[in-house]
Length: 174
Image (cartoon, rainbow, N blue to C red; front, side, top):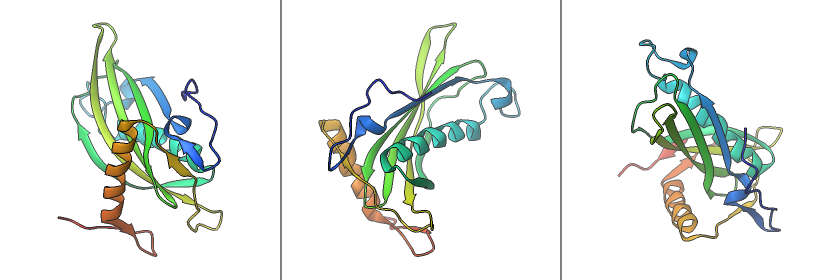
């Protein structure tokens, strides 16, 4: 389920962060668990995150999008079977044809009324034309101080990496 409560009409020059923001949620079931049967399998959580990020990218680009890479996956706290998870995805940066989406996962133990941030990561997507070449996307309009700060940080990450002609990501390491 995507959040449409903060849907803002597109500006002539681009789209706002709120316009493409997405929220997905679900209860973690036994089939989402790792071998122990107690905790969510990390890959299952990343799959939900990729889905939310992909939908946010699609809403911004209005064309086909593909995942290029994922950065900074940090599992902060475990998620158990039975926990309710909410995944929030927001664009933080957009270049001519790529987008960076910050995805945050919040978990909740409903019986104990406890919530916590479980993990956060940055998903980078590319917009593509039907023939598989890069598609130009609308600008990302940032309005708050936090959005401006995240845009600048995303631009710095973008400038340390580039995509070659075979869609391989080459990043400068410090």
